[in-house]
Length: 259
Image (cartoon, rainbow, N blue to C red; front, side):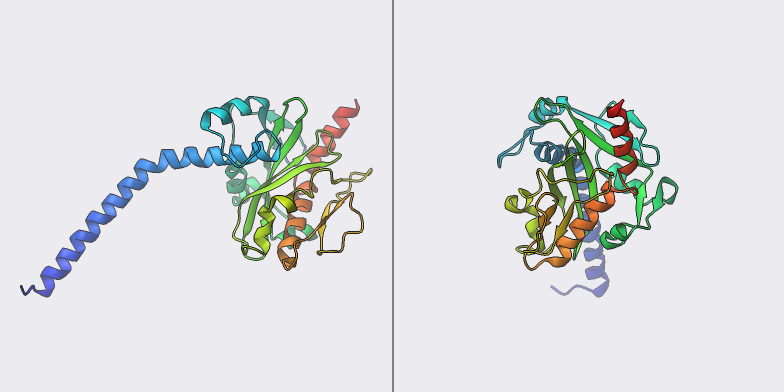
């Protein structure tokens, strides 16, 4: 059968419209489930970095709720360190979105922030307080650039900020087998126990070039063949532990603990 050009174009247009409507409807219908899965993924990463959930299996929503009974979400004023307890879990995306808003964030100027390409940090930060016996910690949302991508993760630190408890990255686009090794449990296992600050409160934790660790108490061995990604992780952690991140809050907590 021969069809006119007008018929072919009209038929193609109808098919496109029907498919577009179907895809749009499916996306809207699945959005609540997608949002719930993103929330569960954030909670799982917090639980893992705090040592509340281990192993290769994923916690069910019910397990996550149960484990999160020992996790409290706080909002922190970056400038003063003042804390406000939140009634419900708030995902790190809240901080990430705020950093993009000039009215809700401040421009960074530090060398570490430039190294991690963190241009702004939000005025209101989030911290997750873990109170489970033997697992007490603060979990801090962090992000910064590696070689190819922005690396989003969580850093767990001791209640008195004496040492790091763990680190994890839940989203990034670094090269598999190279920069992507920031996901490797063996590399992440170096972090627990590292000192993050000295007696004067200066940030001392750093990732050094592979094979160049001189002070194992505060230095993490970088990933072989991934100097830029390793440097990006170092700058990221140092930025968020410094004055442009959680510095004022940590100082206020240390002073409160000395009272």
